[in-house]
Image (cartoon, rainbow, N blue to C red; front, side):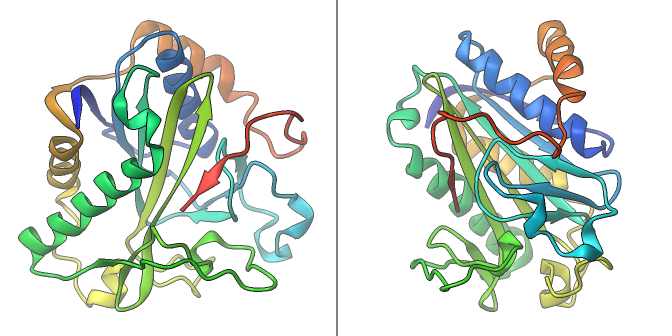
Length: 251
């Protein structure tokens, strides 16, 4: 558990370039000694995010016309639409940075506990990784041991990126099927209920309490906001990722 954690709950959905720019700005802030931050956000329109090393040529033609961004993290493409998304950024001096996979467990188990205590629904960790000979393009059709599943369907997956000692983890909790990716069932579809959809803040606060001893509601600093505005224009899939970077990990 962290000593302190800033909690940012974005009040309005934003476009994909902005969402990814803010995550990167928070990571850069953590590199400079900024605070640990847990951020929750949503997407203004259906948006495809590509894994860091994923080629646009691998993407199905039906998604080529959607807004596209490239994540800092690896793994398959994610169709962001009807979901709650989080990011957690830790500076290098945090204990969890030395054991990064533990952060998956902290956040994923907190999400599982929230659904059980708040909704009376049982989710679980997949517990084993299964790689197909030819992996599907979409991340939510792949399987990893850290996946959070409901009725054996992946509903929450996360990925990490380490940069100069700091750590970024972000993940998507799929709520409902997207019309542009109907093969991915959301939690509401599987539970046949939308009763919890107005409780995003409750989930965010519950997860924050599992992450940090002292939770401080906050917002982006002036420096982070300026960095995000600069980075936003760079969030394009047209340029290949730079070489020689640390390998991102996924879940």
